[in-house]
Image (cartoon, rainbow over all chains, first blue to last red; front, side, top):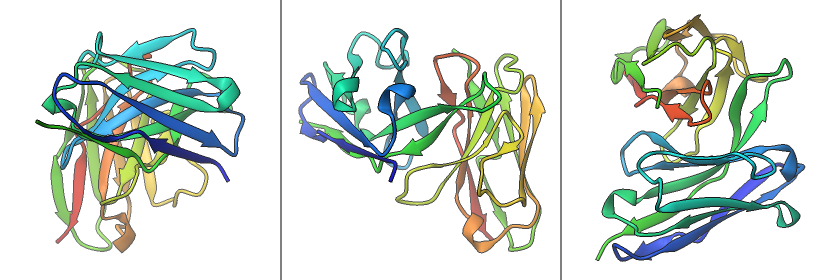
Length: 123
Length: 107
């Protein structure tokens, strides 16, 4: 079964750090780009960061650039998100997603999602 | 970054109704547009890619159209299980962005 399981969320004070992990199983992890998407309570989905299969291409949303760092370990089938200088507005459910490519090429979509891990930033 | 704007933000409809949701991009994205469905307390589910190609297993009452900056998601005959929030997302740029969502509620 194709599965993504996030962990590492919790309650953290503003300004502190947290590291999220995502364990992948049921597919060849290094065949896929991976992303983090978050959703604040009652709000829309917000793309946070993405990383190519070989870590050669990494992108961030402006809202987290310079504070968050995405990484992956293909040997461990794992994706990570190091979150530093956390703010109240980073409070959200963080989803790990797999990005697949269409058979015809050029089109990419997030076809597998984990259940998410909750990050709460509060003093 | 490319901004994605959906309209309406919410709508009320009855079972059997035809429903159309619009998504506009701040610049041309050709057909690099995906649609997702999210039910309360659940992770999003991928529905459509390349603006109009249904993911395997997605009912044919769902359809997508558009190119450039304007796109639509249509549900031809709304079913009880379709009440959810729908999001568009562009994959034209590696910095991905989602629309703000459209909540489809029961009338």
